[in-house]
Every structure is written in structure tokens, then in C-alpha cells.
Image (cartoon, rainbow over all chains, first blue to last red; front, side, top):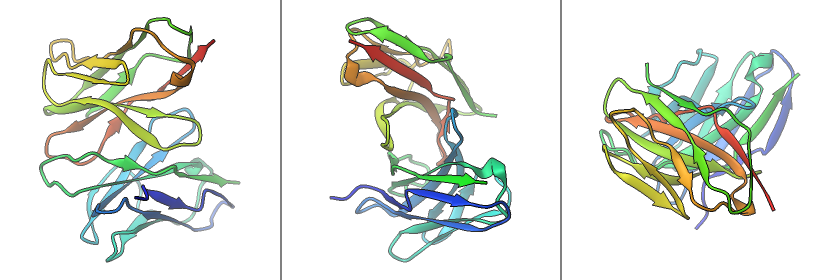
Length: 115
Length: 112
């Protein structure tokens, strides 16, 4: 049973460019959350998708957007990249629980470097 | 807002030493508490959790007790091994919410 997978593993982009990161959830999971982990910091919640809709959003600008597909996989898009967007981007999948929290399983992350 | 504060790292111990990593939290609601571990090159893994006051989470020799009166969830292990070297994150989630709120992480290195 494959766990959460993310692609690519590493990515280097230039300021002002746009980037798309991809995530495939663990088998049986229908909910995907994205987190940004800056170097030496804890992950910060970006947003969560369920039924192809953004359900909850953290304190990130509109440059960060996402999408969920019918097969539950997800993309994170970042426009107009800034140097400060350099980070490890983590995807986590879970079952949708509404008021109930189900364990989130994390992928290995995509390391984005903006130069 | 909701937040988690962990003891500053890095922490370096000898094998078989006793480990404590402090974690305190501030929450607007009634949180569930977690410890995650991140090994080099791997994703975050849930180590243990506690969902209500006085609950003790435990796994792989690690323990943490949910202390509502001190808003704390300190991680302990009686005898650490080299394989425990990793970054440890304390986290919370508020009932009814879906986002995990993490502390800044504590890097632990165990020397043989």
C-alpha cells in the first residue's frame, strides 16, 4: 500500500516564476492538506481540500492556490515566486472527518528553492 | 491565536540517557495534542497523541501526558538510542478544525 507521494522531490525556480507541486494521497484517503516548512521551522498550514473544494485556509496570500482532482490527488500552485517561498512543501492526506480529526499522513515533501 | 512552543534545540545526549523535550501550548478551544517525528529524508510521522486532559500517549518507549492545568505536553523517554536521532515536533489541533498547528521543532542527536 503506497503512502503519500509527492513530486518532484526538488525544484529550483527563479523569482517571479510560477510552480506546481503534486501530491497523491494514501490509498483510501479523500482529503489533502498542504503545509509549508521553512528551514529550521515547524510546518505551517496552507490549505485543505476535500471533494475538490478548498475547505480551510491558513494565513497565506492568494499567490498560493490549489486544486483537487476526482481521484483525490492534489496540486499546489504558487505564482510570482518570492525568495521567501523557498521551503519544504509537505502534503498530508487523511479521511474527511468534518468535526472529527483523523490522522494526517505526510509525504516526504518537495524542496523548493527560489533564486 | 493557537500556538505551540517547544524547548530550543538542538539537544545532544548519550545513548541510554533520559530524554525530556518540553512543549507548551496556547489554544482558543479544546485541543488534541500530538508529537510528530521527522527522520532525515522522510516525511513527518505521528509518534503519539492525546485527545483529552490527563491522557497519556505512548509509542516506541516515548510518553507524553496532556496537562491542561499547565497547558503542557512534554515528551519523555527513559533510555534513548542512536536511532532516535531526528527532529521532533509538538502539535495541536482544535476540535472542529482540520489544521495542525506545529511548534518550531527540536533536533535531537544521540551519540553512541
